[in-house]
Every structure is written in structure tokens, then in C-alpha cells.
Image (tube, rainbow, N blue to C red; front, side):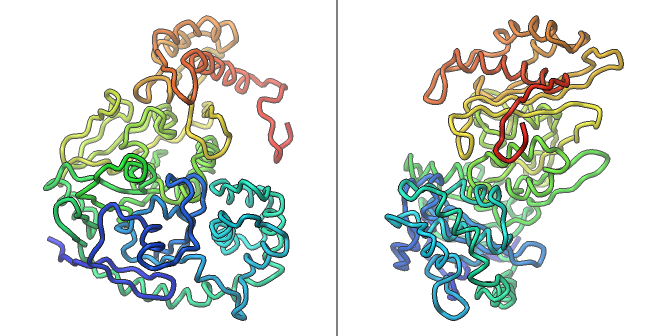
Length: 491
């Protein structure tokens, strides 16, 4: 059994913090504003959409200190053990004056009311440290998770282009102190389990994944918190109790990605950002999808395993993973079992997960070079919006042009992520052409009975699902017509 520590340890700006009084549902934003009077970070939406609360969280990854922007409004304090939290108040230039990002925002009139400005500065700061001379596309991606209602983004983008003319990243104070901060964080890694509080105010940070298995087996009703992009809203919007909460975002064993014999194994704790870096080159369609999940702050926090485990019918990653034939590894104590991912989803809010069992990894076969794979997400906004309907298509053709195999999966069309089995059956063995596809479209009624809600009507979803299959046919048939218009790519 791991030794137990009753304090949460992290660094806040330049200060070592040790807390013994931490509620499982206490957010980082509330701690900053109410307990530390650091009020530069603002609460706008309290759900990770507007970015006004953005701060940086640094952590050691493979011995390297990595900083990422996160939404402090839905980031729980219990997830911060052995991290470095950096707020807008910590920023300064090498000469003690305004930081280059701040000065650029002033000079290019990137702020009006100022409410959102600290969050924007922190997002641009994270971008600047990783990419001192970003393209407009990189700047816009970095700002996906930051809402500004009055300035207009052109002034902000001009400021982002100019930051490096105000200073050098190598002379940035955060860069200068990186080695020292890394050493301080390494010293905090004592291999202990953190346990704080009792009853309705209890949180646990396991020492490692084996310790996590032990904790969850003993307390199967505990709330498992990985990235908190979903659980955070349970607290901020629905006022739900999450005690006892088990925070697993710092378990390195769950954040691994490996490949063997054409199968990629993704640990449940791998974030969208980490998955994009590892998989976008191997599965380009998956990379493009990840780019549309939330903003950078959400992608830095949200995990592949969490997106699967919560069982949402509009989760973005399950349909494409199902279309690729992914297998899911579940663990309880020392016992593991592997099932097809599609079998994990039983009904709305119900998954094939036993008490004390957790998602450990997902194994994803890479698409064959001769196959076709595509993902299409339909949402009201292109960026940082929840899915109305999502279709994933994986097709293999025989030498004579007939459909040898096809897997089609949808989100937003049923109570769970679900395959279009009847449509698949209507396609297999037939020529891959318009006549075959049109003949298969009526079979959608056998597969799906979509609902009407705030995101789309049932009729819209039903039609969109069929049109996505038509689009897939067009894209795989060598059409010369533009399928999608992008400001960054030729039509």
C-alpha cells in the first residue's frame, strides 16, 4: 500500500503551496479569487467555453516541464498536486515592465472592456512559448477557446503576430526559471497517495495506477476525475456532489501511447492535445476532428478515456474509434478484460463497466493504406461546439470496385454511439457508386431514431446522416467538385 500524505502540494506562481483543507469540488478559479485574491482570472461561463479564466499549468512530462493553458473555472484544486500554476499576475517582462504579450495587446488595441483580456493574454503566452512566430492559423487555433465580445479578433491577431518583436522567449522569466521550477516539482514527487477530508469533503489522488485500482475497488462509487471537462460542469452547472473524488490526471501510466503491429494503444489519461500530436500524422481525419473539440484549454485537459467512459451519445471520439474497430481494456483491481468498444455502450447512461472497474486503454487498429477513412462533424459553430451529429466511415474496396468491408458509426443519432448495421449490410458486396448508396439510404430508418433537442431536430439529424454518406461517396470517388471550403487551403 502506498504511503499516505494529507496535504496537496503545488507551486502557485513563485510560492510553494501546501493545503490540508481542500474540498473535492473546489475549483482552481475559486481558490485563486477567494483564497488568494488573485482576481485577474475571471469567471465568465463557468463551463470552459469563454476562456476568461485561463491560466497556465506546468507539469513534468518525461522529465521536461511543459506548460498548458487550462480553464481554471472547471479545473479542480485536487488535480494540481505536483504542478506549477501560473496566473496573469505572474507575468512580467525581462526588465520588470509589461510582458511582451501584454505590451503587444496594448499597442495593437487588443482590449476594450478588458474582462476577457487576461485569459487571452495567457492563451497567447502559451502559444508564444511553444511557437514564437506563429502563423495566422496557429493564432486562431490558440484563440478557439477565448471569447471576446467587444474588441473583434483582428486587433488581437495583430498583437499575436507582433509579440516576438517585443522580446525573446529565451529571456522570458518563466523560461529562465524553468530548470529551477522543474527541480522543485521533481522534489514534490514523493510517491505518496494524497487523501484529504472525510464524508462529503473527501478527495484522493492515487500514487500510481495500481494504487488507483486499489482505491476504486474499495470505493466503487467514487467519482473518477481525469480532465474534468465534463465533471466540472456537474459541479458548476448542476451543483452535484462528487465526493469522494479520485483525481487521476497525474497518473503517467495512463498517459502513454504505443504502436505495435499496426495497432495504437492509447492510455485512458491521454489528453486530446497529446493524442493530436501522436496520431494526426497517422490518422489525419482524427487529427482534424480533435482540432474541433473545444479550445486549446479543453483539449489540454480532456482525455480520450474520459470521453469514452462518460458514455455520452454525442462524445466525439467513440464513433471514429468504433469505425476503426477499436478494442477497450477495462481493469478492476489486477484483473483486466478487453471488449469491442462498440459493446461498451449499452443504453443511455449505461455502460458495460462493473463496480470498481475503470477504462485503462483503448487499442485502435490503424486504417490500411488501401482503405478509406473519414470523419464528419456537424455543429452549429465550426470551432468549440458540441456535436449535433457526427459520422465516421471506414471503407475497403475489392479489386472489382465492390464494397469488401465497411464500418459506419454515428454520434448524436441514438442513445449511444452506434453503428449503422443495416446500412452497412446494404452496401457490402455491391459496387461503390451512387446507385448503391442511394439504395442503402432508406435503411437508416432501421438503424436510428434520432431525437429533437436544442442542437438539431430529428428530421435534420436524419437527413444530415444520409448526406454524410453521400459526401463520403463523393470524396472517395475522385470528384473534382470542392467538398469543403477553407480559408487556409485551396478549394
